[in-house]
Image 1 (cartoon, rainbow, N blue to C red):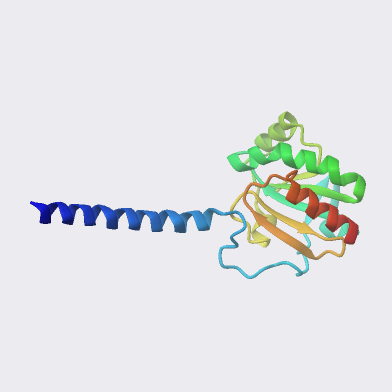
Image 2 (cartoon, helix red, strand yellow):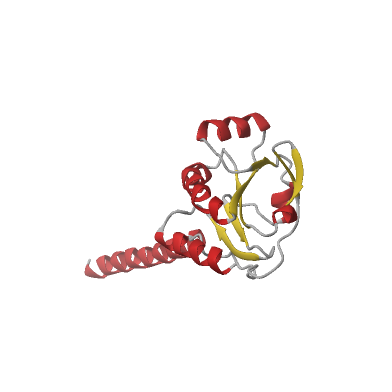
Length: 181
């Protein structure tokens, strides 16, 4: 009988260790700062793309000279919805300093996009990219995903996952970026 109890205990211990290891790996892959094995894009030139803003056709390069926070999102994405108030607050903070948030929506239909923009009080520029051509060019398939582009048109930082844009760390980052860029 004691030998059987020892085997059961050992089996339970091994199951616990295995489940713990699997949970640890899943946690690592879920951390927003984990870059999923891709090379860092920081310092590379941001890909130009066309979009419409206030009825006017524009290009990302038209915003050169500003820091641009390009945020890929969708109204069907819970982390994107949760992140929206923080992006609105970020826009209010950085706009007077020569920067802007530019939201690129990957919603499936324009009505959902327009409804969400209106009901959420989004006051930063947004663009409906229903065909997902811009997000595909950037290799974005996980939402939200954000690229911070410096005044020189180069990517300063890429962030995957929901962010608290008004956290002390982000506030310090943008203060430094806007002073030095």
